[in-house]
Image (cartoon, rainbow, N blue to C red; front, side):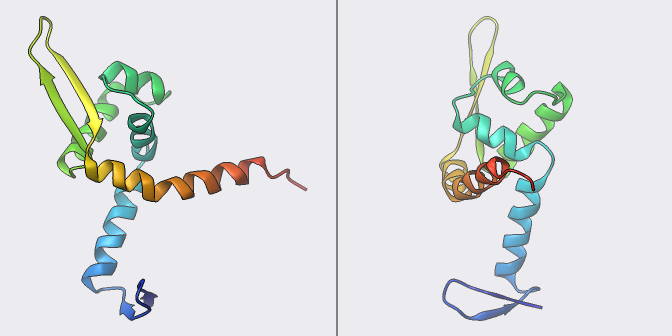
Length: 118
């Protein structure tokens, strides 16, 4: 199986560029991950704001996904030494870039939900 690159060269699926594409698709495709990234793009900063922006996600899973996204470099975590300690999350520059890339897909999906069923 092969895929087209932006330059038009054909690559085998096992080549590094295809593996990296597959890795990011799997990361973004994990349950709740895209919703968390969208919440970050819409301004969620604290854990509770993410929880409110992503209804239905458990605290445990939200914490797990935020850690994963931080380890992938898509979200930054900042500890503010106040009493009590505050933790703020934000999209990293790579996370912002990924969301700019995904925005057309988000828009396309939204348009599809507006199409009346026959």
